[in-house]
Amino acid sequence: MTRIHGWGQWIVGSLVALHLFAIAVHSEVFNERIIGPMITGRSRDATADEGDVNQRVPLALGLAAAVAVTVWWVVTKL
Image (tube, rainbow, N blue to C red; front, side, top):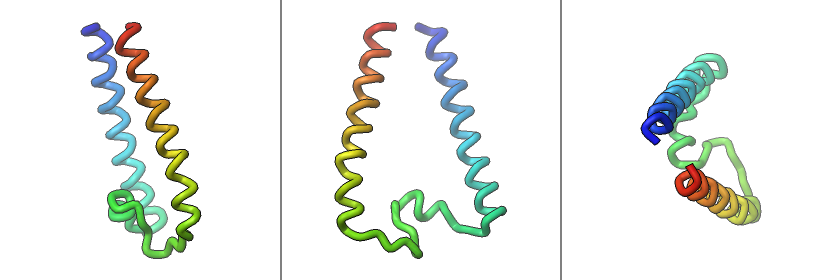
């Protein structure tokens, strides 16, 4: 189990570094401010209808449930 935690630490750290690098590259290449929209979930130029947002709620809940089940399975089986 300690080995899995060690791998997980490096994987998460690498993904965080990759994410920060991608934000920096995207900001420089496209000259867009994306940190604010990442935090709030809203872009200044986005014109989403209320229906579009309501259709994404079940998808988000389904994905959250799938992740929870996967984490539970990994924790209990490994």
